[in-house]
Image 1 (cartoon, rainbow, N blue to C red):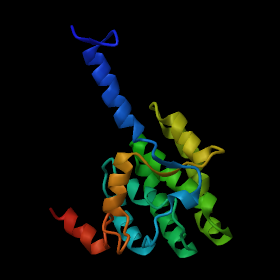
Image 2: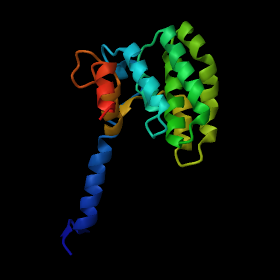
Image 3: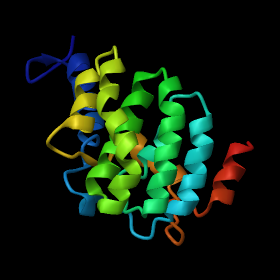
Length: 189
């Protein structure tokens, strides 16, 4: 068996590939809202996408509001997010969706002004207890993201960035979807 520095080549290659993949996981993780803001994001158009995504019963159900969690929202937009969350959270069965939708509410609440917080208050109170529903290994991190002292922002990893680019409307930034209509065209395929 070939070795490199006295380590068998195959395990070393596997470890190297995993390190490379995971090293990109945290390049987009931040602790502040400012670092995670996407310039010129169209929240109203993105909320249309979030409504569609919340109707799905897939692993991405929660991500429509998750992509908004670090953006600045108005009280009216916060009300829409709160309504989406409250109308779907009880029927969510996936640990992933419970975690990501509750994390979204927590960040939006923490970053919101008094009026935004007022619109999100009932959703936030519900979000704080949702990690208790999680049965899997993600319970601890879901609780940390929703109730922890440290706010976690950003799209975190390649999967999050990829989803955001297809679901967060940012007119003029060709890396992101340009409108709700453009998103709808991709859904018809």
